[in-house]
Length: 302
Image 1 (cartoon, rainbow, N blue to C red):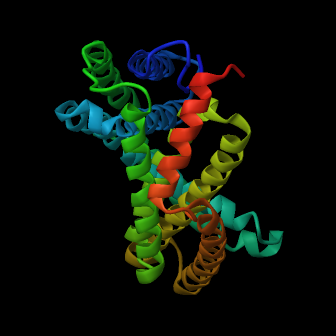
Image 2 (cartoon, rainbow, N blue to C red):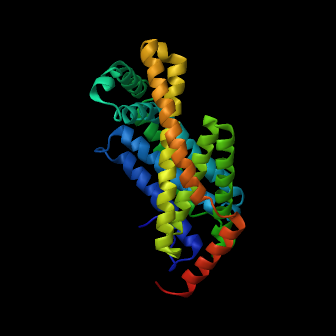
Image 3 (spheres, one colour):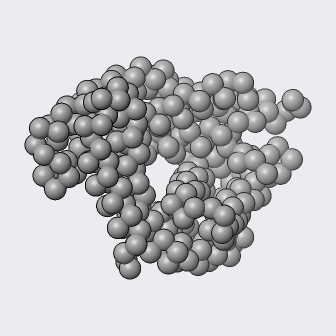
């Protein structure tokens, strides 16, 4: 079933149903022998992000349970992050090189080969064995699934979801201002995390006004993708700065870092344009508007 609330059920039942479905899908992806292990890791991390967004939506109502469940899904994703980070550097380089002509792209063949070797080495190492990592994730997810039915949620209706929805939006606005004030990689990454929580919240609340919601959610997804590309490039640039001499000669390294910085500048300009629209509204006004959407959704059939 869809990752969204249902009017035919109480919010509490919808939240538990969505959590159970996401955990079940993550376990199924781990168990799928046809799914590449790198892709399985990527999918499980995405499920954990959706689950963290879900518990953030109802954070005030979950009380102390929130910290436990958020930490649980954070740790599952974090344990899989090392392998994903190596793959992300490869993908960042491939996207960057796709913008070049064949002649210049060939100059970076050695870097591409070295990055792929690093990724494969991580996958083949004992500490980073993908099957072992996914087995640990499956066990943790099965424990999480067992606990979902015991989640106690205070309140119901918009009161249950409104506080978490508006607070995540508020944090996103604050993170955006901080990112452009400092230009720091970690601040742009923090903004991305808040966008990655806000966008699933929009998907969860999609039934309130699907047409309006869909446009807003697409903008949020585009923004998250742009900030994700920026972060992947930042990780690649950091690797070139710290270990670049092992990857290629100085001339190629400096050329690649220049390309990265130019691409990041373009990405951040586009992120600014989208962010100004996505976060245009004051949080209090947002809360009032979405509460009215909720009341209308409850009162009238589609």
